[in-house]
Figure: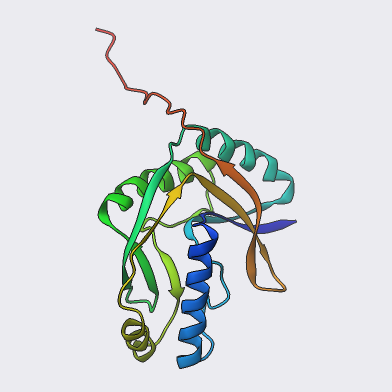
Length: 186
């Protein structure tokens, strides 16, 4: 049976709690919204595979994470997309460090049905109306926090609760692999 999975970066519990509080404050103003109950995370990718394929995916994640080195992620502003997403964004240096982690993880999975994320962010709300985006942007104006990015998580979608839950953690091994460089024989 095919199941729905997600690979993500989780911030520490204090940031997860802070984002949950923000979502509750926004819900108090506008009511329920998409991703209201979602745990704070930075999505790397989503995919569907047969459950029997899961061990292969875990091995690929274990291998790629061994080559990643830990780094600080600094979250310093709020922003939004035209599709109605309101989110917390990392600063430029953090984006520069996050994007290769996201890209290499996506490439390592070698899945044709991969739904990729290429702009790292932590969603507060998704599919908000223009009016509700305006409310969110007035409610939340300043953020300045950081965390050590030293792992990724594999999550499985619960179709009853309509939320992802963590099924495995993969620590960064701080063992960078040399990049293969195509050379010439002559």
